[in-house]
Image 1 (cartoon, rainbow, N blue to C red):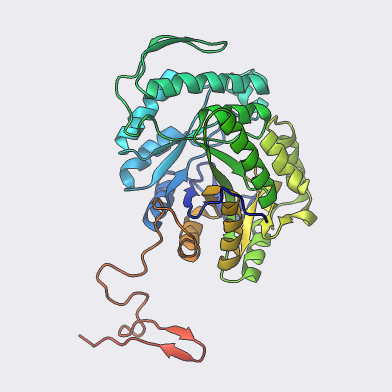
Image 2: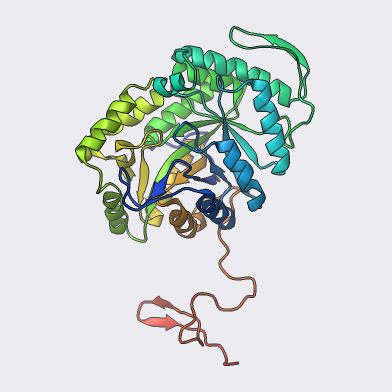
Length: 402
């Protein structure tokens, strides 16, 4: 793969909060978990303790409300940032600005904003939105103008085709100035036009590196035409194990309860959506089990039954790190990762991957020892610390009996 002139050297890593459900398998209730506040707190605290930059909270009628959940988790975490969605067309920009400023203040500046336009006409209709695809992006564009001007401290009138305000202002500003960074994903021309003019970070789902590189370069050019610069992120699942063989067995296991009828039902639901990004995800595998490795170590099995991000990096730690560096070579500086179940996989990814990645300052690799500087790991025979086997020898540290 050709390295872009805009390749990045370091990246931040976020984890995912499964407010729509979690478990050991896809497409079944076998091994499923109830995502109540206690479980979500476990996942958020794990991500906080492991050093992830932040956490994405999904949005939509299949999920618990991201703002309410984030508000509950802010006081239970210390440094974790929360990527929470604003929904143009569902919220007024003034109300969204007040919510944003409040949560940014309450969290001490730990809020990130995900701008979500929505791509499922049936869900939109249930929420009272009856606009076509391009009209929704017109609303998004107007929403973001009012929203960012309010967060920036202006008092103003505005009249667009869809949104009108008079004497609009925000009394209490956010911590982050002029506002928390805006993340946005849109693969259609209308969506990319909004991104080029309005947001700070453009997101893509996990397509093969060459396709991502082409999208990044196209977005970079669109932003430059507006006199702006963008940074770039990617949303991926991950299945990493100590060996590649283990990882691929785990990938097959994840979908072992998914039958052909379930796949057909899911693909039918995705086909009704007018999301270009969702269509690109579905086209990677075409609903077929025999074409799931869509590029080296990029597996599309998740997308057989799950909407949105449908691909996973699969392999041993060094291989997964190499694939992530390929995306960094294309200009990706932010990875939003997830794995099933999200609690255990948050620890696994942090242990196996974060020490192998060139991390930006916002992501902290796990500590290698304990605060009291003593031996760590489970004691052997209650007296000796565990050693590390290297070849035929064993490195062992003995401690004196007390």
